[in-house]
Amino acid sequence: MLTCIYDSFSKWDYTHVASALTCSYFLYYFYKVVHRPELVAAEGPFKNILRENLHVLKENFWPTFWAFTKHHQTICRVVFKSKPVLPYVRETVQTKDQGQISLDWVCNDENNKLYPDAETRPTVVVMPGITGCYDASYVRHIVKEAQDLGYRSLVFNNRGLGKTELKTPRTFCACNAEDLELVLGHVTKKLPNSPIYIFAVSLGGVILTNYLSRHSAQGDFPTNVKAALVVSAPWCSFRTTDSLEEPVNWFLYNRWIVNKLKELLRANIQVFEEEHTTLPYDINDVLNASSIREFDEAFTSKTFGFPSHKEYYTESSLVLKPLEKIQIPMLYLNARDDPFAPAESIPLESIKKNPNMAIILTDYGGHIGFVEGPFVRGRSIVERLFNQYFSSISKMDQKTK
Image (cartoon, rainbow, N blue to C red; front, side):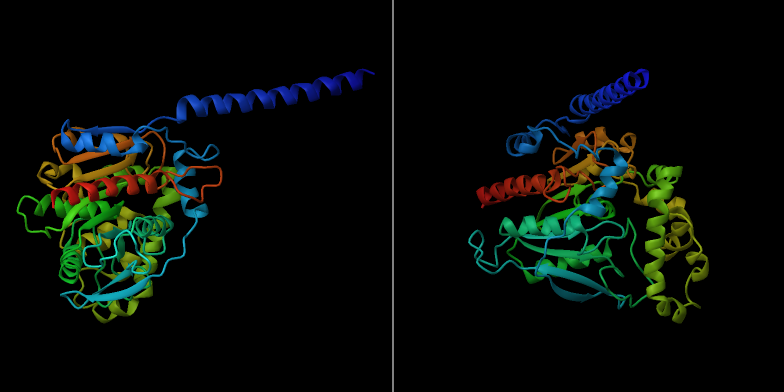
């Protein structure tokens, strides 16, 4: 009899404890996790346009309830996000130093009722992150979103990525925009009457911002580049590297990225072996790097003419750049819990000094995560923001014609 009573109380206790924990979890989720994104920008016309047209600012961001932490958000996007099937057409562009870049196009010619005139159809240039290419889930979703808007898209794959063979012993870095300049010039020449919108992610956003901060004031970039949206940009290379060297971040991200970078070099090892007598580094030292910092010290900095990673990180850090000189509409999306871009490294005051610049901040989202819904796989705040932002830019552009 006592045993039966004890078992009954035990079952009752376990049931109520589980219920209490579940209730606590969801109370925390609803009151601490689910919030509206914050818009930071200077008061003026650009901020007013964003407030009026971006419905994501008027809605709560609902990170996936079972995966709202920064690591869950970052990793679940990679593991679970779907990859829409797209009709990519590849074009190879040769660089001045005899290298090559792959551009993957979705021209959107078939049954395009929104922009039937191919000459004036907007073109979205997609700039992926450090190891990303045409095949990344976030890239495919954005190209699909652009397709639904009637736009043309091209994915700018950095050298050696996207199944592109290296022709020279050079890849890419955060503060060298020669390849971006080449691609934008190529697109402008090919489509002189097409407005160009740029969607850049992580390293792609750093390259783009560095390029624009140098060239906007001089006006020597293509005039049909109308606006840009940048997701998960790391703002300070030093803070990014420090963060990625914290134990958990090193285990989850740092070693994975450096291994992917070394795989790129190994896949093209013959180029480095053929040029070994002229290279400013020993390729074996590069392949022994165990962190991003070591890789940048051994390879990236020397490839692009910097004495060490310190000078490279100084030159690449956006917090040290004249952001106020950028003259096209620039919208950024960052999560405060991004392990690649610590919240304290985001230069909010500098952003507010530029009337053409704004940033949207979410409390959760990780790095290029921002996943929503119980199954993660579908459309998220990133795709909705892309749609709403460039639709408003397109309407503005048409009004000014």
